[in-house]
Image 1 (cartoon, rainbow, N blue to C red):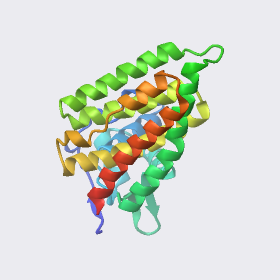
Image 2: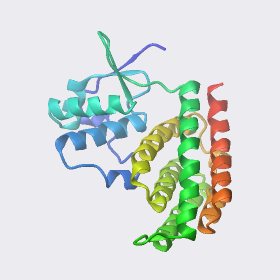
Image 3: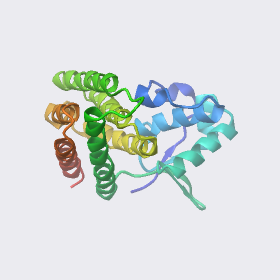
Image 4: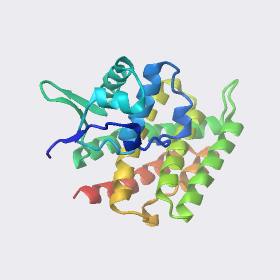
Amino acid sequence: MAERAADPTGADQLDIRPALPRGLLNKMGTRASDHAYARLLGLIVDLQLAPGSLVNEAALAEALGFGRTPVREAVARLATEGFLDILPRRGTVVVELSIEAARQLFEAREALQCGLARIAARRCRSPEAGARPTELSNGLRELVERAESARDEADPEQFLLADCEVHLGLCRLAGNRWLSGPTEQLLLQNLRFWRHYFRAQPNRQASMVSHLDALAAVQAGDEDAAELAMREHLARSRALLDALFR
């Protein structure tokens, strides 16, 4: 695919509305490079910096009101996380979306999130000292209800943000700090793919996969059922994305 230049010349050319889930925005740092990272990440995940487009650091710094150094640091971080490619003699490019990338994304999500569902169910059944499983479980139910409401209203953008919050809530309930970082990165990549999907096929309520079975199994403390429900949730989601790229 030919590379498309992303060369904004003013802030009015970029929509700077929140494009990231609140659960992730609240964890961003306070340095200028952290703010630049959050803004650039939002533009990439929201597809305003399109897959395959060239990234002009100077133009972005001017458009977003940051100095060159914070933007350069943010670009380096986003390249490390797999959102940007820094290509010798060609510049920095937003990573493309492809069926192969979708396959790898769902392999990683299955490996990680099915295990998280098991751990979360275990925490509900046998909480550890100092844990807050009831509070976190109730919070997870509220997040699932928000996602179901967006699903009922066939609102893909609100559903996608709520879906991400559900999986972040499941990670909090599992209570394993070593799994939180990888989970967040996968969910951000996932959000980018699904925004692409719903903009290509808008208002498809049937494509908004429910979380109710996974929630019920987790809250019941049934590890096997929780893992199976998550595996089935991901399998349905993967089939939808695969169909888009075929």
